[in-house]
Image (cartoon, rainbow, N blue to C red; front, side, top):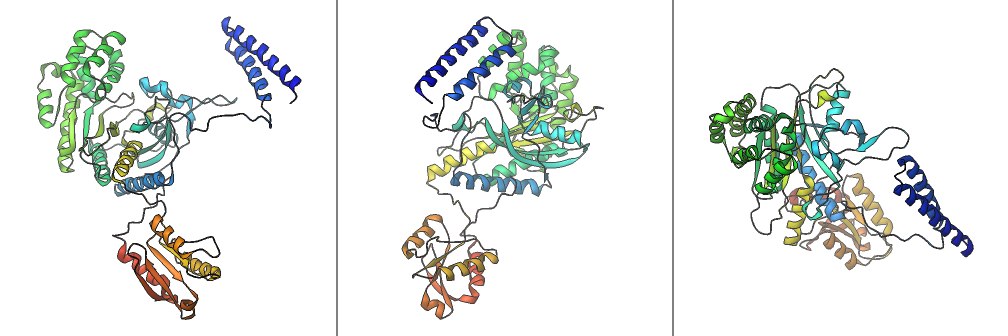
Length: 516
């Protein structure tokens, strides 16, 4: 573009910019402003040429990140363990689109609805990126008229939140959900969700943890007994939900000044939300004069008593705590709610808040059904991003190096001009289902090949040379001990398989994640 043409274009951009500013000052209709802004952007686009490329900062969008091979290996290892637990409990998997009709998501998340990412209208449907995996699951059940299923889903979700990357809070992140849908007897599916959380966190070996539990009927009954108007139940619930991160005085101030709650009602709530315990607390609250006036509270407490008795049978009573401060702000919960928290055992533990949460949502599916047919559901979401953050921090502190491949053997050469023999051996080992690599150089140095095996954690090296091949043998080298043995060329597959079988305990091969 010539200098004169460039000057003319810059002048047009200036004039068009003035037009846009004037329209905004005059508060013109949004459609008119958008039309003129589009013209301005089109003019600006013309000024970028091949000889003057547009400069921009290379970065991932706010609240997102790239994952290097070490991080991905860790993620796959963690997910494989989680999926094993889900399958142990009989779950099957489904998947749903990354975006939904906006109306599907609207009104399901309470005050958190403001965090939904809306997509630009392309002249067709109004869409939003999924906020979680629960609402799409409910839509899936209603659309396909499914009345019972036990399913897990591992997929990315999107929230227009203020990210805290070091604590595992992102705008794009994986969710890992397990849900039981169907009409079953009280608390049997609900307690199994806590058992599943317990098994997963024990498998992760991240130290001690607890699962806080409460019940929406107990919360509603408590609000009713404390004098909270019915139309404020959900918004006051959202305030209580902040108690795990915010002091009571700040929550009380929000209730009174922002949500116009009577100070005496707030103080009565404050007396209850400080309570936590087990069956003895349930009995204490059943006898509470205020809560005796609420049918919802009494029903919720009886359900909690059954839940805690079942917790003993599933051997999770020692990690389960009935906690009246637990609220979980999402509007769709109707019964038991729970949240798992790592307690931290010292040694540089990272504080990341809750690492799992969920509850019962019996009415959500009915919201999508034309005849309002309800499908009772209960589920739990594992906070895998937070688990990844904790494990990465622990690995960094200990100097642990994560393997990024699953290669079991490397075919190396000790002399020149053996590339074809090397390729034949690789092909034979691949055909046998073994995970094998070799150098892409015709004549690599042996030392460089052996160093690569050590750095990559490859356990075995197959070393070939002219004299060995002439005698029908190859050398099999243990990389860790540098011990070498000669094995018959035609028995190579058997020898490698036998070694791997014997040494699998000392050499853990990373599991393959077949979910996403």
